[in-house]
Image (tube, rainbow, N blue to C red; front, side, top):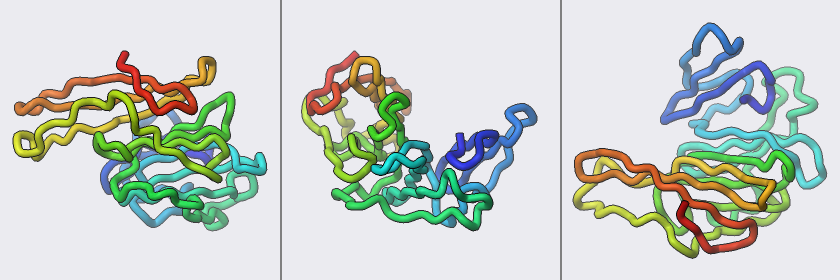
Length: 198
């Protein structure tokens, strides 16, 4: 869902964004969507709140940059949407942003996943981005041998907060040498560094 238009669905991927504006007649293909007013390589968007409680849009790009816009409630045209880097940047990896998820019950809780299965592939904030932590401990998925699988790197594919139990559900794909993918799921309690495999 676009943070700026309730009737616009966005599906982001490598160098392209697909847009559906009526939920019925299919998707339009293009590098940019006018509702975002973002000239870069948008990969993930979400809607949450700022530290002051106003509506905030989140955007992650293909280079691992994370941006915010607090123009959600006031912009009447795309030209009024301004993006600024999420501040402070705690050292996000320079890899594509895979997903940004905001807790629907506690919208100042934000989870971000970056491409790859690395200790720095998951970040979270409990105060709408004012401070970040990287829960990298515990049982991360087994990483593949890069020499055997150079074209199929394992990666996180998403993160979903589970507010009712104070946790997040994280999914990953790991590929065997033939390219067959296996989904692996984990959960992590809010404020913890330990991962638990489902």
